[in-house]
Amino acid sequence: MLKEYVYVLILFVLAAGLTFTLLGLTFILGPRRPTAQKLAPYESGMRDIEPPSRRFPIKFYVVAMLFLLFDIEAISFFPWAVVLRRLHFFGFMEIFVFVMVLLVGYVYAWQKGALDWH
Amino acid sequence: MSPVVEAFVEGVIKAAIALGFLLNSFAIMTIMERKVVGRMQQRYGPNRVGPFGLLQPLADGVKLLMKEQIIPARVNVPIYIVAPTISVMVSLMAFAVIPVAPAFTAGPYRVGWWISNPNIGILYLFAVASLGVYGIVLGSWSSGNKYSLLGGLRSTAQIISYELAFGLSIVSAILLAGSLNLPEVVKVQSHLPWFILIQPLGFAIFAIGGIAETNRAPFDLPEAEQELIAGYHTEYSGFRFALYFMAEYINMVTISALATTLFLGGWLPINFGWFPGWLQWLDNFLLWVPGVLWFLAKVSFFLFAYMWLRATLPRIRYDRLMWFGWKVLLPLAVLNVLITALYVSLQ
Image 1 (tube, each protein chain N blue to C red):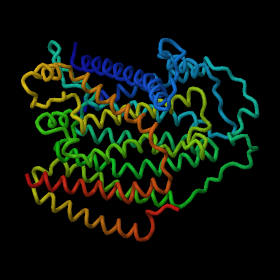
Image 2: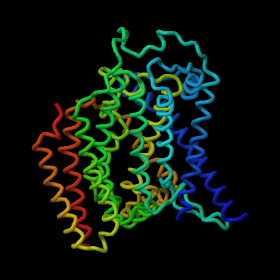
Image 3: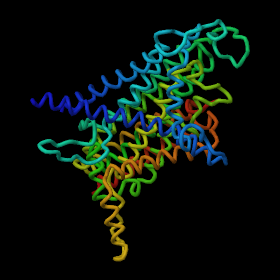
Image 4: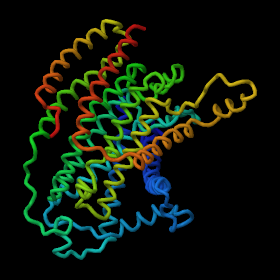
C-alpha cells in the first residue's frame, strides 16, 4: 500500500522540478529594471497612504471556527460511509443521532447570528 | 529489473505523462475560454496568432516567461515568492488519484491509468485540494496591499464555507459506492446507474461547491475586478501571476475529472441498452470508443460548462454567497446524506 504513496512522492518531485525550472527560467530571461514607481503597491493610481492594517473583521474568525467544527463532522462521515452497508439500519440511527446533536449547535449558531453576513 | 526499479520507472513515466497532460490542458483551456466567452459575447476571441489563434497560449507563455520579475517594495519576500508555487504544486498533486481509464495488461505488467491508487483515494484528493487555500492566503497576506488582503480573506471564507457542502456531497456518492477508492467508485457505476441519475441533488451541490472551490464565476468574488482589482494576485505579475492562473485552471480540470469519476461514470460509455435493432450499430460504436476518450469527453463537457456559466451568470453578492453556502447548501447536503444513508442502510 505504501507503494502508492511513493508514486505521489515521485509526482511531487517532478512537479516541484518543473515549477522551479520555470521560475528559474523566467529569473534568467526576464529583465530587471526596478524603479520606485514600479515597486509601489498598486492603488489604482492613487498615492499610497499607509500599509494595510493587519486587523480584519471578526466575522472571518467566526466562519473559520464554524468551519473547523463542521469539517471535523464531515470527516467523520467518510469512514462511516464506507462501512454503512455492513451496519445496516443501526448505522443509520447512529449517524442520525450524531446529526441531531450537530443540528442543535447549528441552530444555536444560526440564532446567534453567526451565519449572517453584514 | 528488480520490482523496485520497475515501480520507480512506472511512477516517473506516469507522473511525466500526467504533468504533460495537465500543462497542455491548461494551455488549451486558456484559448478555449477566450474563444468560448468571445463567441458568447458576439465577438471572435483571439484569432491572430497561428491558425484560428491556436498558437495564442504559446505566445502568452513565452511572453510571461520573458517578463520582468517585479518584487514590490512592501512584500514579505520569501512568502511572496513561495505562495504561487504552493498553489500550483497542490493543484498538480491533486490529480494523482484520478482514474482515467481501467487498468490494462501490457506483457507481464498490470498498468493502471492513474498515478497512484491508494484505498483512500478520495480522502487524499480532498485533503490535498484543501491545501490550495494556503497559496492564496499566504500570497494575499504577503503582498502588502489592501486589495490583496481583502481578496485573500474573502477567498478563504468562501472556500472553507463551500468545502463543507462539497465534502458532504462526496459522502453521498461514497455511500452508494461503499468505497473511497476512485476506480472502485467507477466500477460500481457499471452495474448501478451513473450516480448523477440517483444523486441529482448530490451532483448539483457538488457542482456548485466545485465552482466555488475553484473561485470561478459566478463565485469569483476573490478576484472581483470592480471592487478588488484582482484580489489576491493584485501584486503578482509575470510568471508568478501565471502560476496562480495555472493553479486555477488545473484545479478546474481536477474538479471536472472528479465530477466525472464520482457522478458521470468515469471512463464508462453511455450505454442505453434499449436501442431498437436498426440503431444497434450506434450502441456498438459507443461501446467501441475507448474509455480514455469517454473520460476526456466528459471532462471537456464540464470545462465547457465552467466557461458557459462564466459567460452567462453575474457574480453574486458576498453576503448572498455566505447565506447560500451556510444556510441553503449545507442543510441540503446533510439532508441528502441522511436520505441516501437511509436508502443504503435499508438495502
